[in-house]
Length: 222
Image 1 (cartoon, one colour):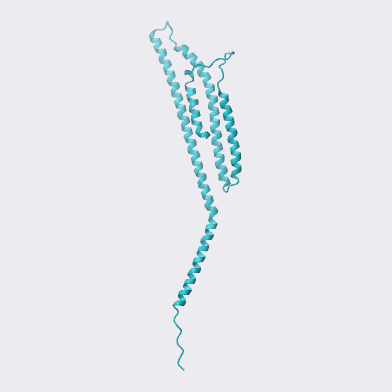
Image 2 (spheres, rainbow, N blue to C red):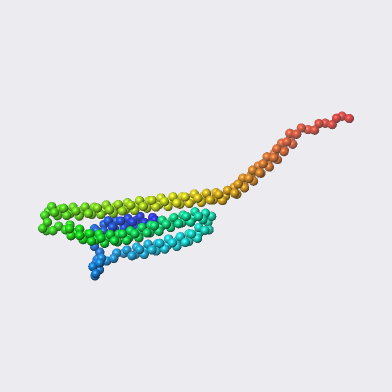
């Protein structure tokens, strides 16, 4: 579930980072520092999900010890936990990254607005040049956001492929272990069938021999 939700999370963060300089600047606190955004709630959510992943791991680990293929169960369980915790770590890193870069983007936006605002004393060609420069900066920001979104999608696809491969591998090993456990019983049934068939064949041969035995010769005349 965490892996499936990470793509949407990263897309939102990437688009938010790419368009940060196009958003209105946040309200300033009395000290002049931009008001903090709701990043802490995201960090709290990630911490709660990390605790939930660890709790599920402990429960499923205990269940693994009740199964026949303990090693296979533990290996698959650890792989799932690693994928989930890695995804949460990426989300946390993305939050820190976008929070830091958004502050820089807001400063850049203020500078861009100052540079792009046509002054009354500028000539028309200077005003047009400033507008083109602003448009180019906005296009670069949009391209950067799209690139981050594409990268996030590729990461999600690779993680899903790895998880599917691990799951199929675990299923194959479980089937092999089941066949190995059933092999002695199957061999015993086969041997009993062979012995029964051999007894029936011997009994049939004895009956056939009795039926084809020639009659006894008559006694000589007195």
